[in-house]
Image 1 (cartoon, rainbow, N blue to C red):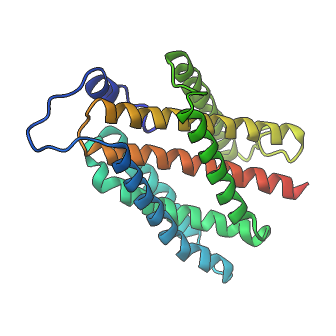
Image 2: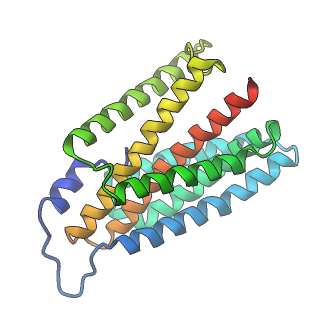
Length: 244
């Protein structure tokens, strides 16, 4: 995931970094403000394809622009965190196009599902933040390894599903509306939710270690990546439940 960059951990978090006089440091409040900005950008750009879908227009082109643009911008941000102040808002705009199209398609099929998914995502975020702040869940090395391992396993499943789909083969159970398909989706939602703990830890340690202020955009970007993933999985779960 975007915010699990080992080079950043090594450079900024092992020990406080001496910064030039007058150079601002990363803060939790700064990350929160930038994450809010990114979310506003996502919602703003999502309204266009959303409206077009509900008007009965084809937004497949916008969807793929968002998906491909988001992937390119995400990779650029991951490998060049210093660019995050520029690439993160563009990534949010691209994700807005993709999410607006997807949400519109689901909304057309199941009225009310989009707002349910938004509220579900918000609820999971608040619960995970509460668990982190109360130290009920902590990003220990063992916890981090487990979550990253589970995340990589999910990404492998996604890759296999994509490759099989290219040959017209549907991956067993993944898209099943039965109990197994629902359980698989719930597990993926749990993995996405646990990634929030790693995001919170990244932000807290970055602020505590006095990382450069420019990393606030990178922390906000990583948080947005997880929230987008979580939202899509909750949307998918609600759709599976509606199909039964």
